[in-house]
Image (tube, rainbow, N blue to C red; front, side, top):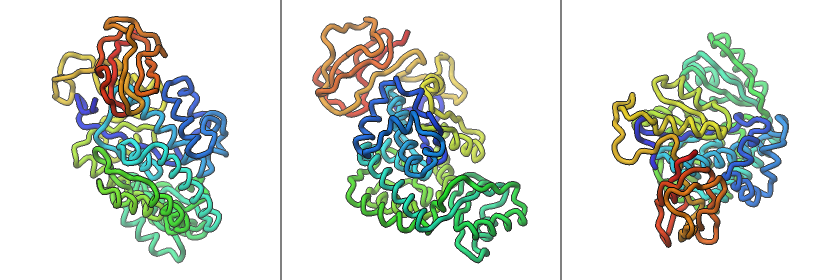
Length: 402
């Protein structure tokens, strides 16, 4: 079910490095979507379960770990959202989150994306060792002033992130960044905060990582995305796979134009922003950029009920967007079981409409894959029919949870 009813057009946003925290996968351990962890571990040869459950803050802060853990958890949460039968026609990711957005839109396969993210993180780690640097957030100065002060500094420093009006991030060598930070304060910045990172991300100091990543991107299958995906490099939506290859490569050495990306989405009438992944950084940036949006961050299983309440309010009256509940309506007590992969569907023969289904009960097969209900409830109806060829994430059955 496309998330457009009652709250305007909905876009899913995906966080980047810096949103990770120790134990961030713990609340998802017993959720059916946890099965993605094994696939990601196979793709990267990294123990993702250990990284998401046991890694301390210092280990997670290492760029190769932070990126991979954040991407995989974002995709796990997206899978949990899709199991409810919800999707979006718009996607945007901040820095690393762009890989999440492309995967969510179908442009990248999950296995390939996990492999690329792993290569990206390790390439950036190597670039940091070759060209050490750091970053600082600058609050309270216009974009032009921050751009000008970077140009005035005798050294290597650039604007790395346009996060929201009055909130930019600069990056460069340690000495140049210190000079730029002092100048920003002299120019009236409300606050200049050094970030706890060891690299000058999204600057020319990442050029060696770009070269290494480009080789991997060129050998990866990229398809036209389904729906809108807005790029960091120019803040515009793109469809051509070859364009996305160039954008993913250029992104490492180019600033993240998040303010412009949000502006593009708002101009397309997206008005509800759902952050899919750890933390709520992007939710805060959206509020700063356009306070009159609806916003929600989904990073724990308990947030799924809040999402359903936002997407499908149970009131029979018209909601505050002025739209009535025409057509299909999914109540907050209802859930859709969706297919985890493509294949022919066969339901379990002994299941009947109105029957009580237990959490984890086998309800059918898609190909050779068993489909277990992620909820307990009453079987209200079959959406897929026997021997129907399903696509991944296509709804199978409708349950009313108890």
